Image 1 (cartoon, rainbow, N blue to C red):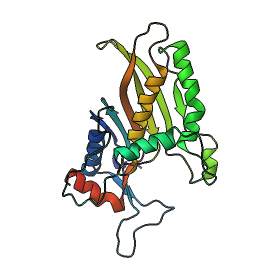
Image 2 (cartoon, rainbow, N blue to C red; image 1 turned 90 degrees about the vertical axis):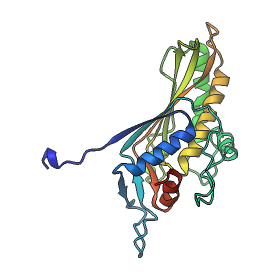
Image 3 (cartoon, rainbow, N blue to C red; image 1 turned 180 degrees about the vertical axis):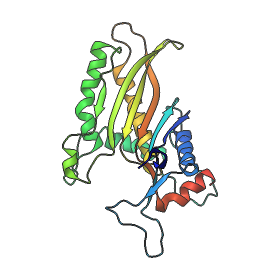
Image 4 (tube, helix red, strand yellow; image 1 turned 120 degrees about the horizontal axis):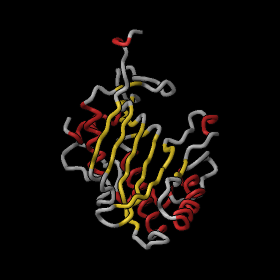
Length: 248
């Protein structure tokens, strides 16, 4: 194929102030670009009427920087009159997700993995490392992915890693903990709001557990989140609600 006939991937970058704004801007961007839409091969296609209830409209690759992810509320408050039956998440659901899933080391008998099981295997060592050796290194990566995952076929964690970085905020005179998060596939409408809210609560908890710099006593405070995915998507049956939320 000649180069002038080739279709290239289109990475997208979004900068937002807080989590609700990030969700809104990503939804809007997904419907104003020429995004890729497909039907998963393992899940069938349109029904006899041609309705795309199993389709996926996705970014080729997206990076979103949230500069003040701690601002409340952590999820969008839907305006009235949009015809959306229920919000994708609420603060109560986010708090429950954090407490019973992200920080829960156990899994049920019918579960092959949970995020919490894999996070909790590493988090004590992460905290201990920062408390012992300080903040001037970049070794604090929590890996949710496992080499054995691929052998399970469809049962693959969408969240692959939570990478941490502590950097001095020279203007404020404090250290800040930042998260770099990668999802291989991610449901923008229903998954993103509760996942991001839960991860933000996890970051706040980590900041409290680590505390100030072990040698200088300089405080550690909350920082930014940079999240990325190769398949942040909206499913076909939720597309009308997503479009209604952003007025498209």
